[in-house]
Length: 141
Image (cartoon, rainbow, N blue to C red; front, side):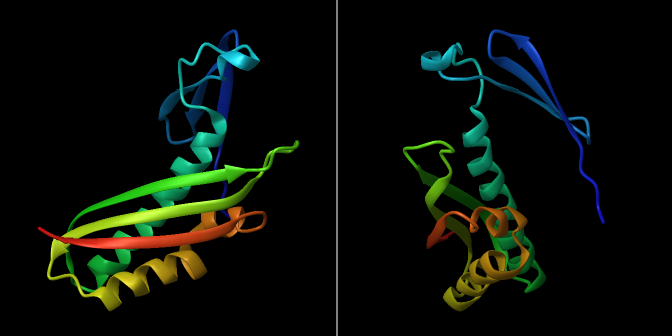
């Protein structure tokens, strides 16, 4: 079993410093409506960022292993949350803009499908409460 660690420490008010086990940091904060000062990423936004990063890494890895010339990948993610506590994600939309030289549609579709169904740990966890919707566009470049 692989272990991943993190530490979150209060800075001031609702602002917190998050440090990953690999030594990277970011600042999180809450919305002003709940006592924050809007000085950092919100924790639930971080879930969506993690999903986008996880899925993008999978997509790039799969396409590059297939020897496809990928030069860029942008994942745009939108999540809809429940109105009542706990305000879990109910719907998540992820749109990939993949840029490369003569990228085959079937290769991009396959990479997205494999990420969603097999490799992306974030998607696997979020699918427990949310319906995932993926779209894509391929740009030449």
